[in-house]
Image (tube, one colour):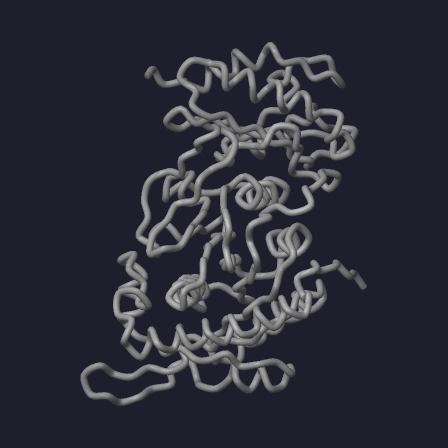
Amino acid sequence: MEQINITQIEEALLNIIDPISGRDIISAQMVTGLQTRDGHVAFALEIDPTKSSELEPLRKKAEETVFALDGVLTATVVLTAEKKAETAGHSHDQHNDHNHSPTQNQKTTPGQPVGGPTSASPPSLMPGVRSIIAVASGKGGVGKSTTSVNIALGLAASGHKVGLLDADIYGPSMPRMMGISGRPASVDGKTLDPMENFGIKVMSMGFLVEEDTPMIWRGPMVQSALEQMMRDVNWGDLDVLVVDMPPGTGDIQLTLAQKVPLTGSIIVSTPQDIALLDARKGLNMFRKVDVPVFGLVENMSYYVCPKCGDRAEIFGHGGARAEAELMGMDFLGEVPLHISIRETSDNGTPIVVSDPNSEHAKAYRSIADRIWEKIEINLNAGANAGPKIVFE
């Protein structure tokens, strides 16, 4: 099949007229982040956020026009409500901000605008998912993704149906850590089938872009990408979806709290004081949006020399346990700093599956068991009715 190129796509889009400006969407500078890869085309239309419902037919027409081109397998067009009303579709500077940005490659459900504060969510983005837990940290570099993966595998090892969502749009790591390559398939052309390995369903932006492609996106496009990975993926029936959050307390965290009923959250930290300060911010963020915090995990808790057996507390020890007591929450467990944990994660064979009888794997499984106990308690108590956002 002959490959489509960006020039051909732009020529087709010259026939799509913006009903508000009366100009085609190319000359009106509405098209941003146009990208094509192996027949998969994606881009965003920058609009006035107050016009998202009015411009949904325009989005749909642009998507159908591109999809009809020879060499196009899938077409994804999203509305991103980033421009102010008086400049939407006309700001040359803002267009240049996105001119070379990659864009998302998920299929958009027809008839559903995304990406602006006025866009409406369906009653349930993932109706077959029984519970959703967020694994978060206040700062990067504390081993949150490694913890997320091994907790998910620990839950699966106990017989639960588990999914893993990589919500770190800017720095997706799940493809490598879960040993998965390739692209998700789409049977109906509307929803993507998640990738699978070790009995876990996985979705990540890393499956949709090249590993070395920088995600140069602003907030609305990041939020749209996350929402589509929840809504437009065939998750099926799951007991629990583990969400690996990006570090910090920004757009992704608020979007997740607003769009789905989080059953609970876990905070990962290393023992030293500076990491615990940031972990406290993450904890307070979840409390502010009424998401239960199941507890803290202390990662890189200590180091045992594999040759001599001497133990060294490189980052200190016990800080997360003390912080949990101070904040009135549970301490879920500690995981040592060990080369095998790093090596198995880098090799795509996480330690819970590659060495299930090791002390490190047992530590992760023990944490996973404690998390499942809390999930059941919260579900039975009706705690998944959905958070509310409280601003002070």
